[in-house]
Each structure stands twice: as structure tokens, then as C-alpha cells.
Length: 149
Image 1 (cartoon, rainbow, N blue to C red):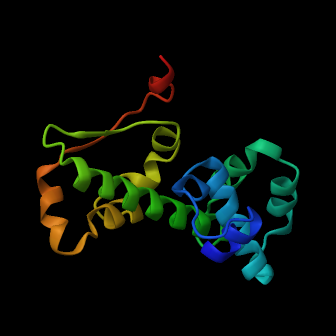
Image 2 (cartoon, rainbow, N blue to C red):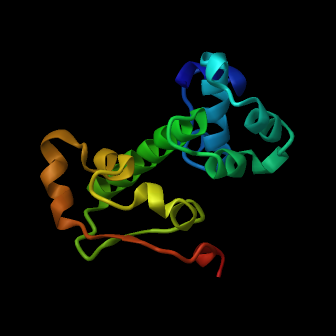
């Protein structure tokens, strides 16, 4: 995935987290998977994806049914999201709580919620520092436009 995104955007050494953790990032992950596993592509969904323009991530999210490439893309994106949130929590150690905002959270809460979700597993997967995260309450802000108010 890293090599695919670096090639797609003509990067030499790094990619930003937003290339995976965002609506556009979800589209990048799905696009990668569709090229890696062409036999698993749902042609109808892929056709909709190809013509969706800026809404490609939404097409993937809406079609993220268990056992599909869309679901696999969502798992990857949500896991990367959880990992990034966990890294932030370790940087700041906000013992009063870490409030996760933005459009991804409310739109995908059913992939985030629950101790066994990919998000929470990645959030807590911090090796010897994992216990620190037990001191950081995590809150999902369900208002999408909070940052632009």
C-alpha cells in the first residue's frame, strides 16, 4: 500500500497519514486493493467508484459489507486511524480525555465503537506504552462540522 501511494502521488520518501486516513484515503486503499485482488472486485461497485469523483470514499464506505474489498479497505483505513489517534494520545497524554472529531468519526462510528474494533485494537497497540492509554479517556465527537464552527 505504501509503495502504491508513493507511486500514485509521485512521492520519493514519505506519505502523509491523510493519504490513508480520510475519505480520499479510503478511496486510495480501495483502489490499491482492487488492483492487488482484481478477482475480488464487485464490478457494479467498482463502476460506481470509478465515476464518483470526490465521493469515492463514500462509495467504499456505503458498500463495506463483510467479505468485500470495500470492507477490507475500511478495516485498513480504520486501523490506521486508530493507530494515529493512539500515537496522538501518547504524545499529549490528555488525562482529561481525547476528543476525536471530524467527519470520519460520526460517519464510521460503527467501525470505531467497541473494544474489539480495528480502531480500538490499533489505538491500544503501543507495546510497552499501551498501559498509558488506560489513563486517557477517549471520546467520539458526533458533530461533523465542529472544527469549522
